[in-house]
Image (cartoon, rainbow, N blue to C red; front, side):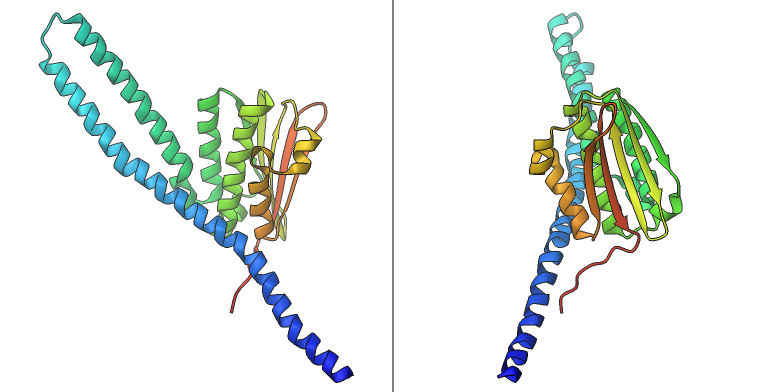
Amino acid sequence: MRHSVDSITTQIRPGTSRRREVVHFAPQQINAARDAERTRIGRELHDVLGAHLTALRLTLELVRRQAPNGNSALSSALESLEHGLADTQSAVSTLAHDLHPPELSHGLSMALRAWVRQFERRTGLSCAWECDDTAAFDALAPASAAALFRITQEALNNAAKHARATQLRVTLAARRQSVTLTVADNGSGIPAGARRKSTSLGLKGMHERCVSLNGTFRIENVQPCGTAVRVTLPRRAGSATLS
């Protein structure tokens, strides 16, 4: 009887272990697929839509040159179209960059620094930047670098939209076995209920990215005011494998 129980236990454990691997592996695959789709869309926006907008701008310039002089209504309409087209090109360029930042291929620290500066220009908010070990972050696995980049984007955008913050800070700190990202603001903070739900303000997505890479995710109100998002990932993030 004891032999039978041991045999059954032995048979169950491999199956249980495999299910755990699948559960752990799935979020990594989902995030990888999501990032790949972001990259594809970013390239399409830049290459395809960008080319069409450039063609429209050239057509407008041609129409302006051929338009009869003295037609103030037509000149005003063309000027309005040109301004609208320029705004659209700028918006598409910004969106394409957010979806597929070319700097990320040169290392996380450069990509984040560039995106933080772009965020400042776009929002008018002051955002301090600090990285204590550029080499450590640039040596991270692509999945870890992408996760930290996307979490920074989400956290800063949340602060700009919801926190009524005027000052923000992005800090990258490296330790022997781990790296930590902190995004802090001086805004109104996040209600405890929203933190517990973890579905508001993109918190669930940030949490899932961390868990899939064996990391930790914390969000807390800080004194005297504001919010801090802290993410810690192993420098060599473990990954589940399927055989």
